[in-house]
Image 1 (tube, rainbow, N blue to C red):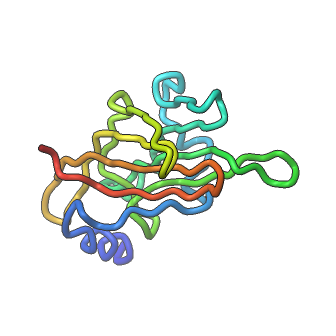
Image 2 (image 1 turned 135 degrees about the horizontal axis):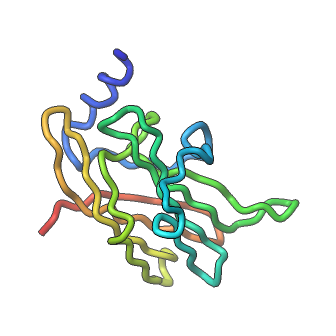
Image 3 (image 1 turned 90 degrees about the vertical axis):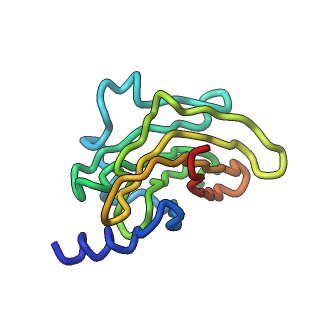
Length: 147
C-alpha cells in the first residue's frame, strides 16, 4: 500500500512523465476493457493495434494503453508495449472514444486521447499525445493541459 501511495504522490501534476514499457503484468488479457470492439482499434493496415486496459489497481491509476506494433521479431511477432505514467501506475481515466490518429513523417503515427490523471489531491483532465515509430518501435508520450 505504501508503494502505491508513494507512486501516486509522485504524480504531482499531469506533466509527470509517461512511460511505454515492454508488456508485463499490466498486459494481461483479463485487463482488456469490454466491450472489446469499442475499446480496441487498428491502424496502418492492421499492423498496429491499440487497446484499453484496466488493471483495477491502483484505483486512481488503473488505465493503460496496450500497443501491438512493428517491428516484428524473428518469428513474426509484433512488439508489445503498455503505456502508463510509469512505475506500474496508469491513468485515472482514458476516453478511448476520443482517440484520433494521424501520420507525421518525422515521428510516425501520432495518437491523441482524452485522459485524466490523479495528482495526489485531485483529478486533472489532459490530452494524452503519443507517437509510434513503426520502423524502430519507439513510443514517446506527453500530456497536454486542456485548452
